[in-house]
Amino acid sequence: MLSILFFVCNQACEKVRVLDVIPEAVTDENMVSRYGSEKSFDMVTWNIEHFPLNQIHTVHHLQRIIKSMDVDLIAVQEIDERTAFIQLLDSLEQYDGYLSKLPDYGQQMGIIYKSDFISISEPKQIFVDDFYTFPRAPLVTSVTVKIENTIIFDFILIIVHLKAFVDEESKSRRRIACQKLKYYTDNYLISGFEKDVVILGDFNDELNDHSDENIFSIFLTDSANYYFLTYPLTDQSTYIGHYSSAIDHILVSADVLNEYKGGKTVVLKIDEEFSNYRDIISDHRPVLAQFFLF
Image 1: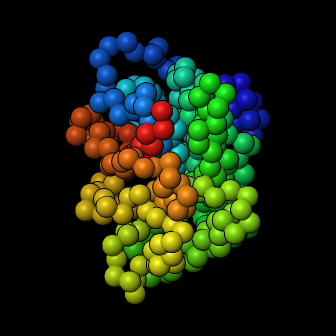
Image 2: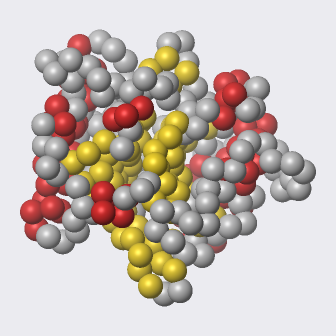
């Protein structure tokens, strides 16, 4: 955990405020259901609204929720306070993590993962000079999952948080973002360097729009190479704010489907288990993809 502490504090401790001391890890009953499994690699995308939405209460309850969920890797979006992210990681004994460098403040992206059998390369951000298309530069890393020193799954992970809002300009910016992401990932597939690519996060748009309006058309029309694990879930809301919609997605290259055989992708309705979820945690639900590899 020292690496994340050093990185985050070195970048921004002079300007962020320290929250109250986080409570000790709880030992009482689980906050929510356990969604992880010893037989699967469990990967989640989760927009944790303006984390920490309710300051120390959010940090404390999110720690309890993550421990209860017991998943292996969480790609998070909308982290507003670095110090709170550090405190969250410090309270999760099994996990390590990384927070993006950009933007300097507000709505950063990060990774939380079980470090006993998962390793990641030094993450980087792409399209950092293209703020118009990517207000939050995507975070890219290589993920390796090992069991007893044997690699059972390795892939390129790209975390995104695309432009919000429903106006035509915002939608156009998201469409251009998808086009640029595809050109970027196509290079991995064409070069043969890595055939397994996962793009996940808050895309801020729905998969089932009409083809003339669908920002994902460039991926959807290339079904030989890409597939949305979340496509069967278009009738389930991942955003539960002032309207409901399915805008958080997990997109994979075709080769990932070899590891995904027998897998499942679900929207975790933990707001129905934790009554204060909307006020304390987020206006987005996490989305889980399970790969039964073990």
